[in-house]
Image (cartoon, rainbow, N blue to C red; front, side, top):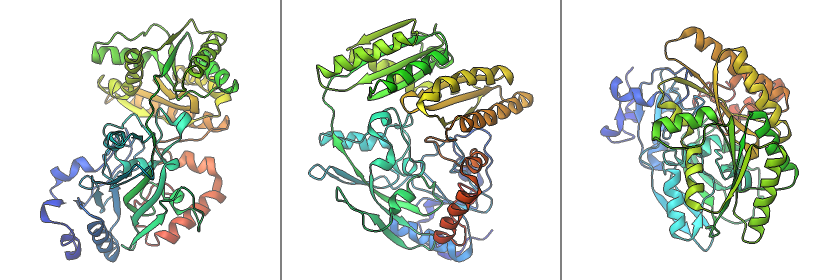
Length: 458
C-alpha cells in the first residue's frame, strides 16, 4: 500500500516506520492468543499537532488508527488490524507540569507511571494508581484501560484521578475536556467516557491528574497463610464485612510464589495454598488497631498462621513479590492466558473455590493473584507452547471462568480492559440494549469507525 503524502509529511522520516521487521514489535500487546493483523506503518508523533496530522490524514483515506502505549496490555486492546497505522505515543514523554498548590500534574500520554509518581514525590505529592506494570506502562495506556493497582482498594483507580484530557478526535481535531478545578459539573462527563475507552473514541495527547499528599506513615502489614484459596477468600469477606479498609490487600497463590522463588532465588513462603497481604497506612495508634482487627479476621477465617509486622523492608519484599508474579511466571517459558474477573467481595471465596474446580475439570494449571480487597482476580492459565490440546482446554477454562464470574454477579474485566479477549463476555454481561447504546456513542464520535476498530463494541 502506498502511504498518503499527508501521512508521510506528518512526522519526520525516522518516525514513520514501514519495514516489516521494524513494524513487527508494534503489532500486539502481551495478551496470549489474541489475534492481530498487519499494519501498513507505525508512526511515532512527538506532539499533539503531529498526532492530529496523522489522524486527519488517516481519516481522509479511511485508514484505521490503532493507538499504542508501551504494549503492556493483557487483553489485545492495542493489537493491530490489517491495513492500519499503529500510532505509538512512545516519544510523548514530557511531564508538562506538577503543581503542588493545586495538587495536579499534566503529562503527555507516553509518560511511564513510575516516572510520574517519582516526579510527584519530589514535590511531596503522590499519584496513587499503581498497576503491577507501573515501571513500564504509560499513563496513556493506564487511561485507556482505567488501570487500577495495589492501592486501588482504598485510593481508587485511574478514572478517580483524571481531571482533564486533551485528545484528537476521529476527524483529526484537537479538543479539551474536563477541568483543573477541584469541582465541576459543566456538561456531560466526557473525561469519564474517554477513560477506559481503549482508544476507540479519540487519541489522548495530554492528561491532567489530581495528586494526593505523599504518605509519611510507616505502614503495618498483616500476612495470612491459608490451606485453600477459598479460605483466603473467606478472610477477605470477613475483613470487608468488618468495615476495615486496608491501603493494600493482595492475594498470591502457591504457584506464583514458587515461580518467583525459582526466578529470583528468593525465599518466599510457598508451602501454603495462598497468602494474603494486608497493609494499613493509618497513623498510630489507629494503624495498630486496624492491623490487629485484620489479624483477628484472618485467624477467624482459618489461617494456619497470621503475622503482624512493622518492618518496612520485609513488607516491601512481600509486596514486590506480588508485583513480580506475572513476570516470574513468564520466566517459566509457558504460554500464559490472563484473566481479569471482578466479583462482589462476598462472592470471592466461592469464586476462588470454583477456580480450583475449573482447573481440575479442564486439566489446566491455573496460578492466581488478586487485588483481593476489590474482589479483582487475575487467574493465569498456563500451558506449554505448541501443545494445542492444552491450549483448547485452557481456552475452555477461560470461558468457564468468565461465565462463573457473571453468574456470581461479577464483571468480565476489572482493569485490563475488554480488548479482544473479553468481547464475547462483555456482550453477555451488558446485554444487547446496553451494547447498542455503546455502539451509538462510538458512531457519534467515530462515524468512519477508524479508531481501534474491532475493540470494545466490536
